[in-house]
Length: 81
Image (cartoon, rainbow, N blue to C red; front, side):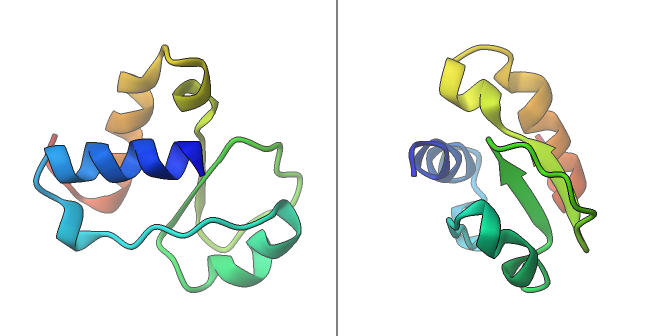
């Protein structure tokens, strides 16, 4: 939930709040939910191949190194920074 809240703020602050839908789930639910989304941002190790791109979001929990991750997320979604 903490990462989802941070991402929600980042999207809103950059003018994309109304263009994204965020959802949280367990690792066990990830594969079945992935087909409904364009991107997965996770703080857990994912050992399965997912049907969408997976981005490691641990930087949002530790509070540093977030800019390269934000850049990857925005580029993956086709958003300008």
